[in-house]
Length: 166
Image 1 (cartoon, rainbow, N blue to C red):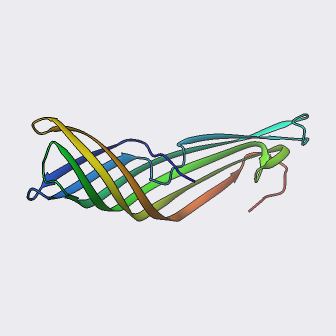
Image 2 (image 1 turned 60 degrees about the vertical axis):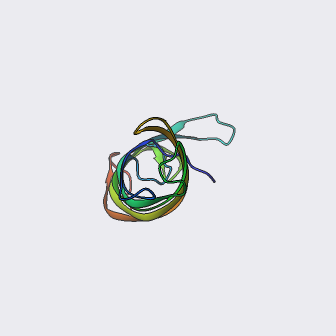
Image 3 (image 1 turned 90 degrees about the vertical axis):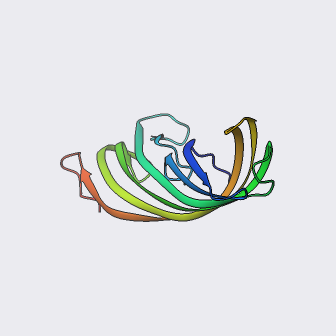
C-alpha cells in the first residue's frame, strides 16, 4: 500500500538554472512505519477473557543526498524531477505484557530491543511555486525503495518461572 512519511527538512543549492544539489534530513526511516504502535490480543476470539498487549516504540533518522533537474529553470511555476540516495538508522523496543508472538499468553511478559540500518533510493516529481524571490512553496511525490538491515538485538523474559523463549 501507500505510506505517508513524516515531513523532512530539505536544502538545495542551484549549480545552474536547471540543476540543483539537495540534502535532506528527516525523522523516521522512510519505511512508513509509525514511531509508536499498540497491539492488543484477547484470550477468546470474541474479545472476551484476558487481554494482553504489545507496545512497539521506534526512533529513527533518515538522511538523503541527491540532485534535481528543473524543467523550467527558476521560473515562477517550476516542475522538477529528483533522484536521491537514502541512508537511515533506528532502533525499536517491543514490550509484551500477557502476550507472546502476537497472541494472548497469560502471565508472560518480555522485552526485545534492537536496531537497524536503512539504505535505498527515491525518485520524485515535484512542483515549486515561487511567490516571492527565493521563497517558494512546493509539493513533491516520490517512489522509493529501501533495504532494512537488522542489527544485533536482545530478548529479556520479564516473567519468572516460565520457560525461556528464544
